Structures are given as structure tokens and as C-alpha cells.
Length: 116
Ligand code: 5GP
Image (cartoon, helix red, strand yellow):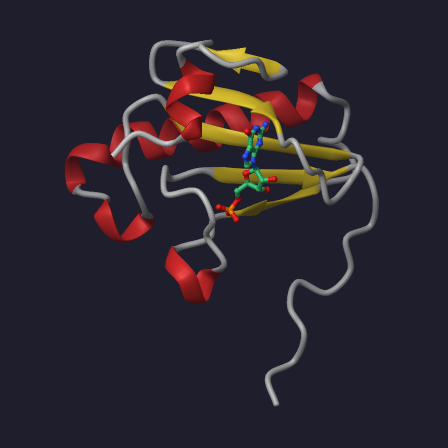
């Protein structure tokens, strides 16, 4: 099921793309939670982490290489950053086209609030 991300990948709607190749597209999040907030998205439509298969291993690994390269490109590699992948409703996923958030440019603090 195509989402808004398929249109961004196809450049049918505007976005600030920072990297693209035949497997992955990385673009600025429209509603950033930190000074640097990039979404790294496989060009192939995979809805959620729950849908990945062994056939996707290469593309998922490539997303990490792209994350590392984009972090260096944007000057946040030395101080560090956080990679986040949300899955389905309890994970807080809003767009059902698998994506990795690359977040940095400030100290991010605790990852999650403590479970009561
Ligand atoms: P999720 O909650 O699914 O892990 O993250 C979805 C992310 O996509 C959110 O951070 C949201 O700001 C971003 N987003 C949603 N629609 C658009 C859009 O049209 N363009 C861009 N650049 N980001 C979007």
C-alpha cells in the first residue's frame, strides 16, 4: 500500500532529500524533533519491521551504512546520534512504509520514560 513516502521517493511531492540511490532515500523530517532529523527509507515498500523477510537483509544493512554516511555528511558523527525504528501502533509508527529516524545535533537524553 503506497504511502506519502513513495511519492517523496519518486519526487512526485517535494522534500529535502539529502541522499538517494537505487535502494534507499534519505530526507529531512517535516516535523523535526532535533536539529538534525532525517528519515532513511527503503525505496521498496515494506510496511513495517513486522513485514521484513530474509530477502530484505541487504537493504536493511544498507540503511545503516547510509545512516552512518549521512550523519558524517551533516556533521553529527563525532558527537553521536540516535537511530529509531518504530513498529506499528504501540511503537508509535504513523507512516506505514518502514523507515529509520536519524536524530542528533543535541544531547538527546533518556530514550524512554520509565515504565510505571
Ligand atoms: P513514524 O511515527 O511513522 O515513525 O514517523 C513518521 C515521520 O514522518 C514523522 O516524524 C513525521 O514528521 C514524518 N512525516 C510525515 N509526513 C511527512 C512528509 O510528508 N514529509 C516529510 N519530510 N516527513 C513526513
